[in-house]
Image (cartoon, rainbow, N blue to C red; front, side, top):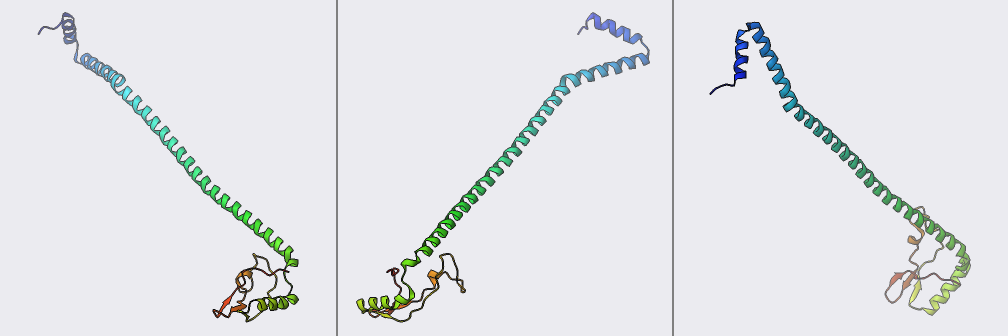
Length: 178
């Protein structure tokens, strides 16, 4: 294998130099090779790695933002559900208060205590199978009020009538009006 003429001339010139000059030329050639390898091979790899790292960081930031939005959305859904329930509860309380006012205002239509005995006597005459066992007057209260035992007024009515046919106590199914 024959080397080109130009390489042979450079080889002769290098042989003519001293050891110190040869070492300096060798170090300069190694430095050039390292710089070229760094720029050609390593720099693009490092640049790509830096870009990938930035993209990864951006994606992680987006994921954190999405998780925060998802949590905020879930919290909003829960609070919306709680708000809706709270609003329904307030609406029901207002309706109940209105019913209390309506029932309180309709007290004039109910049978008074002094007329109750006459009315019950008439009912018992018409229905001989029903027997009056006891009778007591309860104070007028609203639907939402609770008595001393912790029971609502509609829960504490006494079983005042007994059916003679079945020998069981029965509760009136309707209120008696004038």
